Length: 146
Image 1 (cartoon, helix red, strand yellow):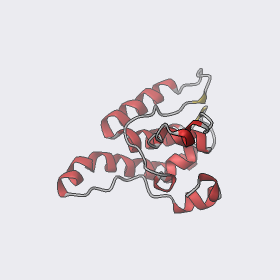
Image 2: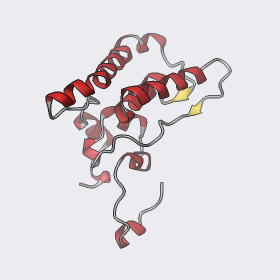
Image 3: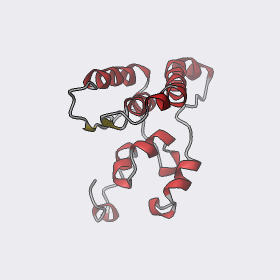
Image 4: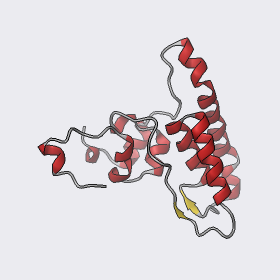
């Protein structure tokens, strides 16, 4: 499936949620903090965030950054990255684009990227960092770098 085959609206509508699906009961217990944080962040983004309007100095917004950080890096590291971002967000901050650092969870293809990833990474080059690298064969050599 090509990245260019779908319109952005179609990709967003078909994108999975941010929650991590456990395969076993042990994984469910281990993933509970991460999924709980994701649920709380989604609730905040649905109820509280619209009340503030468009006031964020950064892209993505702090709540979108936190949701992506917890989705990709898990509860502990994601929470740490989110707190660090909140401390940088103040009236004297220059703002701008501030991406979640790569690492942690990888997604096998474009269809498996959660909704927050599509919203925070609007172009295929932005999304490439969260998918496994292709084999360095001849086909990958002609691909433009991000």
